[in-house]
Length: 381
Image (cartoon, rainbow, N blue to C red):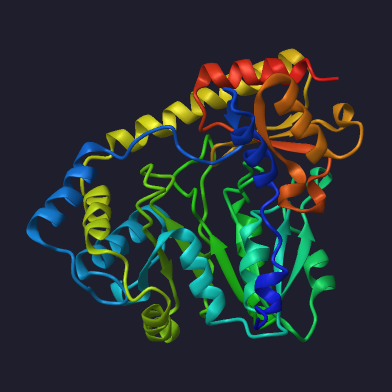
């Protein structure tokens, strides 16, 4: 039979999946702290807006870049919440944040190019880059440097083939938030080196005691592409609505690329997204407050059982140091934890080699489960 492309054939499967597969195959109840799936449902008015769209028969094609009402509402949100001045024409509605990232990479990366990606970082970055027959080049985020990128180290990784640097703040898996002065320095780095900065801001609404700073605030040369999502903020992971914000010069290119990729995001989902942005925000604040409470529970319990961790300042994950307990591979340790104590966590190496000895715990789980899960982790030898 004909061969599939090397990019597709060689794309690694997510390292989280080994734990997920083992959990499902066990047939036993388990405490799930391995996936970033909110434990909430979307606000009622959001669900109702989608229902009304179906009832009206709004089930036909819409513009590739999204319906005007949503793009206009997003321009307002970007200005008021992110400090980004963007015309609605610069906002491209996507099928979730993942597709926004793929869209951005599709118009900036060619076969043989290189993309700087964080390590530890979301595994889908490397997957998406590889599918485009480009090469992911990992830049290390280390505890000694506060898990913050260093421009001098990035410069050492640059080659004539470097086209993009991906920045993720708040971070999945680290829960860290990059300070504003470092964000500005990274934008200037991209400008000086004539490369794109692709900013993944999926968790922009979820910070605790610190400000989320969008790189596009500092963009003077049109080098920043910003990807956002409704998935985490509004618990709409399965609804699949995100958006990409581009410089004016490439907005039309981004919009036309949606035609062969997805044609358009489904109309009822976009109606739900409009309602999410323009309706009451009390449920959003309730969810954020709940994650903040779970964060406090997790930190207190980890301290009690003697497991070091990185204080999460954003997203809903906590990065824990289990190097003294693994006896080697953290992935093997995560499988043993599931088998012995029925607790599922994401092994740090799912996010890059820099995650060896670490594990990501999701605070999207119920608070009682988080406490019980950490207690059981403390019992692992």
